[in-house]
Amino acid sequence: MPSDGPGTGYARDPKTDERRCSPCADAWQREQMKTADVWIGYTGEDRKRFATWSGGVLGKVTSYVTEERVRSTPSGGQYRMRHVTVQPWMQSQAQLRGKVQ
Image (cartoon, rainbow, N blue to C red; front, side, top):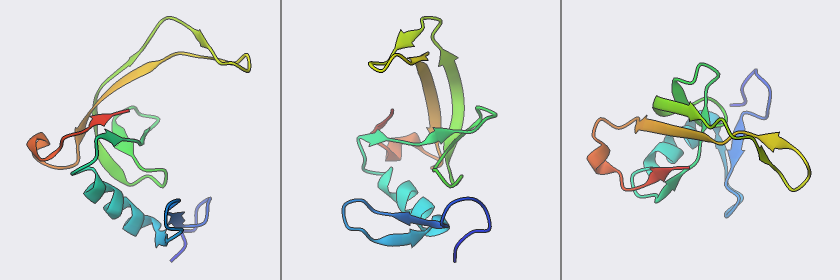
């Protein structure tokens, strides 16, 4: 069922073109974290949550550090690199083998 918020309420798998409702996609992503080498997600504005695009919780941010050095993009933009440490949603990190990027 689509959400009332912005967006479609669905996620699409780019490899299979399969559509999943956002809660189903969040659960699928948490399951994938068990065997993935790299995890991709978003930090909440409060810098306490590591989440999916739709806001499904993937873990708790335990450290968030922004480099002082300003970097430049090829198009002339600027940004600061951020280093984030996350405790995954699972109770035991021993169940995981990846790293957050």
